[in-house]
Amino acid sequence: LYTVTRNAAADRFRQRARQRHVADSEDILSRAVADKADPAGDAERGELGDLLKASFHELPRRQREVFDLVELQGIPATQAAEILGIRATSVRGNLFKARRNLRRRILDVWPDVREDWR
Image (cartoon, rainbow, N blue to C red; front, side, top):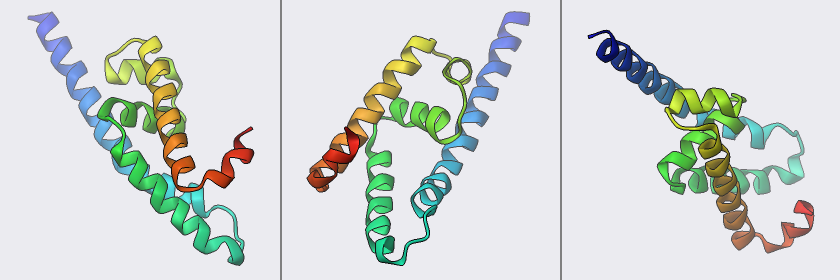
């Protein structure tokens, strides 16, 4: 009975943590893109923000959760692993894949920014 209760509580904690972090992710993405005040680049940053949001939502669920927790919320990979109920190595692997997928999507739309990534 103790194990069942503990597991149910852990599942509830993970579920609430996921909901809270995913809800904040769009706001964080918007603020990250809008951080620099440059009127000439506002339109381009708006396009980039839209592309990032769309690309973020197209990621597989697990990659999206991991990217949100680690990159957007700043939670260490080990803690993100506990929240999601997976191993830290899985967090790092999913984070790598999420970054790669986002980078590819941006480069598909704007190939000229490739130099900025080197």
